Amino acid sequence: MTVAKRIGTLRILLREGDCMFLRKLLPIAAFLFLPTLGCAEDGQAAFVKDMVHLVGKAHPTGHVKQSGDDWQELVIDFPGEDHDRIVNIGRIWMYCQTAAKADCKVSKAEFARKTALLPPEGNVGDLRVTVRDQVYYDYVKSLPSRGDVPGAKATDASARQIGEDLYEFLVLDSADTIALAGPDALQKLSISEEEAWRIAERQTAERLPPLPTVEQLRKNAVAFEEYEYLGSLLVQREGFAALAKELGPDLFVTAVSDGFVFVGLMPDGEGLQRFSKTVAEDCAAQQRCISPNIYRFRDGQWRIATRTNAP
Image 1 (tube, helix red, strand yellow):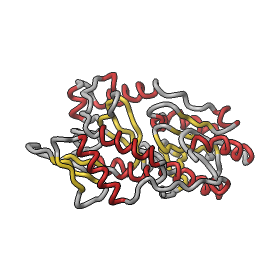
Image 2 (cartoon, rainbow, N blue to C red):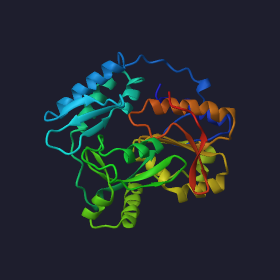
Image 3 (spheres, helix red, strand yellow):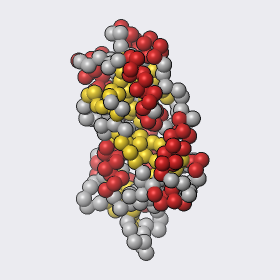
Image 4 (cartoon, rainbow, N blue to C red):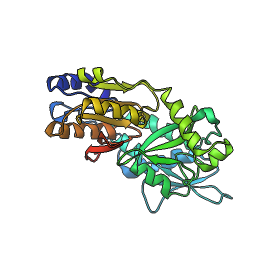
């Protein structure tokens, strides 16, 4: 059962418990009967072998092999190039553990195809901000090259922390790819980093729905769907600070992906802990999960309310 299908049940449960909610995750797993989906993959070795084949088809001039250090990484060696390209397939593997076999197959092929796309040169009008977690931040900063953003230098990424384990990144948007934007990219755009952040946040917010109102959240939780960059709602900290001031310490937010954000009210306690397990399950079902955590807004930053590892 997907997050979207659980929303109706969730809203009933929250209303009965005088609780409320936000836009990319959902609650009380103990009260829900969830079907167990069969693994879309026969095994990890078969998955890696298939991804080596698919990525190899997308890069006919390169040699693709599994990294010796990490099973989640594929190395693409291009003759004559100074650096190998790294492709991380860990997210697709996690997604395929719960997805239907047909959906997994489509996602693997699409992922492989996009590894061959060149990042957009972009212009100032393409600047956006995207929200990612600590794992993504550490990964970006640790590699000499980015596999999921072909050709981008790991150090050429502008990021700033907005929460305990959350960061916003400057990116350049295009129809097929999103490229990290750092000092090199901004120099080509003839724009300062401070100005880039201001423009990117404004242009992203213009494409997102407004934050829920105090009145809406007092009546029920609010789920956001069918927009891109929904995780970037969490960048609007001044707006959430105002909500937290009016609604008190029970305000929470989940952001399992850029396609679903959930905002509501729920106190600390057993119910929140049960809900955190459902959030983690929803995170694991995403092709790219932002975070499996539930957050409170405290002192201008997002703080983790519960800590549950995604399955």
